[in-house]
Image (cartoon, rainbow, N blue to C red; front, top):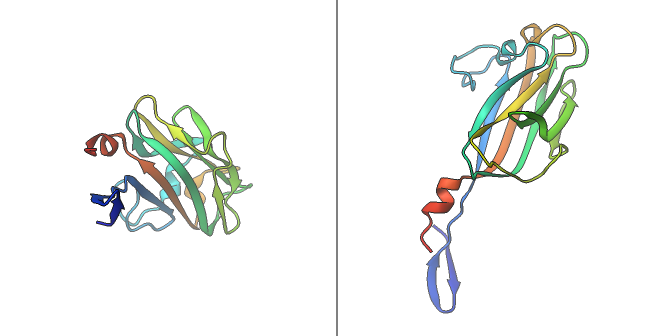
Length: 157
């Protein structure tokens, strides 16, 4: 663990923030929904919101973004994706097209978020016509920097 020197005493520096990662893919070896080698997008009918990361009361989301690594191919129309919390689908990242490679970060209604009650970070996928089961290609990586309440309270100062 790194050391920080303060007033000629050695104190342990504690890094509380962790980065959670969720990968959505048409052939995902480790999908967030529990089955291997499946099309994660098949779970997304048009307008479906899926919980991907649970938050406890007091957890702080300091940053969140998603990378479209491989554009979505298959659903008709213009598929979009946003990231939010239960009840607010665009809390973090507003709806963006997933038809082109790109990185989308904190363009929603808030960059930092403190969960006041237990909730979930959600993905809102809009297929733009049809549903996600029509996806034949696509890879999206979602990253969230989270400071967990339990970790903050476990630090002895």
